[in-house]
Structures are given as structure tokens and as C-alpha cells.
Amino acid sequence: MDILLYPFVWLSRIFHCLGFGIQSPTDYRFVRYVVNEHAPYYKYEEVGRYDDWLTRRLGRLYLRMANWLQPKVVVATKYEAYLKAGCEKCNVADDAKEVEMVIVSTAKEIERLLPRCSDRSVMVLDRMHQHRALWRQICNSPSVTITFDLYYCGIAFFDSKRSKQHYIINF
Image (cartoon, rainbow, N blue to C red; front, side):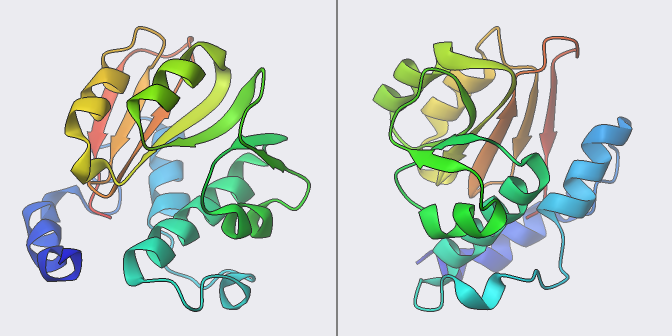
């Protein structure tokens, strides 16, 4: 069903392509070279051959994010092959004391892992279009500063040195 909605979602966000309107150089680089990277990565063929289109698309995004962040610990229940392909030295776990990258999809996971996030942490809400209330909960958290709404997933950064900013990105 999501594949039928994809053109409409893309057209509704047409003015949020390729980082237009983003003033921060760091955020622009993240959107341009991680989120909206269209060049094939070196590990794309090795993972996700038999996944559906949305899982493959999100998995490739998480691969690029793991490659960009190079986290030591990733807390995730899905996408382990993609994360390991992006950063071979990272440990994919179900739980950790302090997390650098976390992929969540339920309110319980958010409540459990939000206090464990530090300034270097990145939280991803998987399948955000199905969990809008959870996304608002993450955005309203005082420790979250930068958020990216990609419709299919949401990305939140916890850098306390930055001011609060919310971006809508056409992904």
C-alpha cells in the first residue's frame, strides 16, 4: 500500500528536496550526502536483496548513517545486516547503557532508551508515518535539538550545543 502512496508523498514534499532552505552547513551536509545520496554504496548488493522496497530503502539509509556516524554501539532489533555493512566495528545490541545510534519503533523503547542518549546520540523512529504521536513525543523532548522528518522515518539528534530545529525532508 505504501508503494501507491509514494508518488503523492513525494509530490507533497517537492519543495523540501536536496536540503533547500537549510542554513546550517552540518545539517545540509547530512541531508545532501547521507539522506539523499543517490550514488551506489559499496555494500548495497550484499544486503537486502529479498526485502520489500520500503525496508530496503530505509535499510540503505541506515547503512549510510552507520557509515557516516561510525558508532560503537547501535541499539536496534531490525536492520542488523545493513548496520553491520555500514560500520563493521559497531556492536548491534538490544540494550546498552549508553547509545550512539538507536532505531526505535515503540513507545516502550523510546521511554527506555531516551534517558540513555548523550550529545553524540542519534535516535531514529522507524516507520514514522504510522507513529505520528511517538514522533511528537521525541520532538518535544527537551534533550532533542535537531529533527529530520523524512515521512517514512524520523531522525533526532541530541547535540546540546545547538538550538532546536525541525526540518522536513523529501526522502
